[in-house]
Image (cartoon, rainbow, N blue to C red; front, side, top):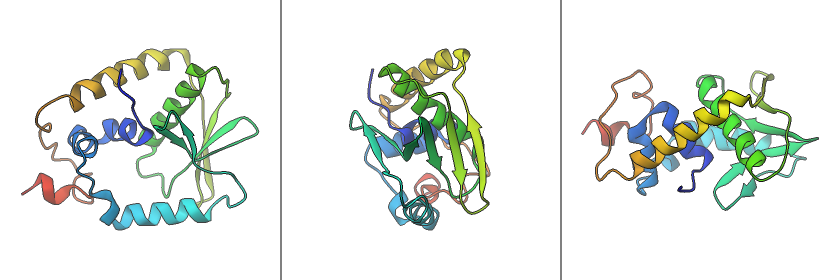
Length: 162
């Protein structure tokens, strides 16, 4: 099994083409204003916390406080994707022998928090998703364009619609 970062895992819920580009070194996100804003929010929120907990040089957790895993997001626009990403982090920690009862998605702009727990049925869903990610990134060419509303603001828009 390949190493799957949290970004890769999240992209698999949004767009397999974006996932494929990202894994194959085509990284458009550094130019994206949305990504820059998200990084600024991450850097200025929870300043007292030790951030960027790296696991296996692959998964970077925002921070852990009192046994709770925190993921900071700029908005709740792709909330289900964030929930799945946080469940993946809880899964990875459990695989490493660390029991974290739950995670919290924090959205500082709205002062909103969402509790996330890893359920037993999530394990098989995560493992299926990981196998799917592996098959996508092993493809010689990127998957087809999905033509969804999430495409227009995507950093990869121009490369998909050339």
